[in-house]
Length: 183
Image (tube, rainbow, N blue to C red):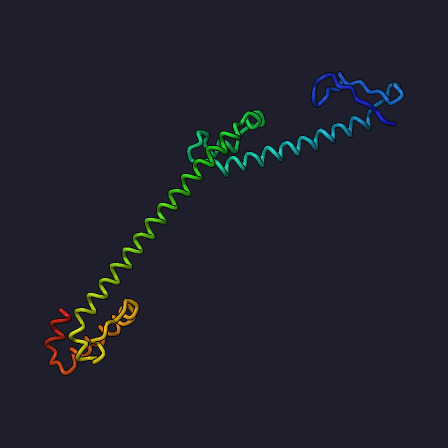
């Protein structure tokens, strides 16, 4: 038979305030129903505790640096404080902080990119100047050195050409010019 429990306001209900009736209106002992009710309340309490713990962990993990409550305090909030917690303000603050952090990383990346481009330009100019300095020596080394070399060719050949010029300049040397170069 189905039973109806009338509760007079307290949750979980207190035994003294609980009145049990069967569907036909007669009184009922209620022992199995009371156990089911206690089990149900226990299950709800477990769910409530698990949800509260999950919320605490989320608040702890996503806590913005500018949030006034310490992370350690967020993990220890009781249920009443969790219910009153200003989630909208919390996530708005989180979003603002995340946006600022992303903007900082983008600025750093942009600055690094500009520095890289500047360094590449300086290196290309330096390689061109080295080639201009080496051009007279190259005429002895290579008859084709009179031709104009493009930027990629200069970049690919400068190290090789420098090594050849050093080798050529030290060939048949008595050692005096090597001593000057090494000092």
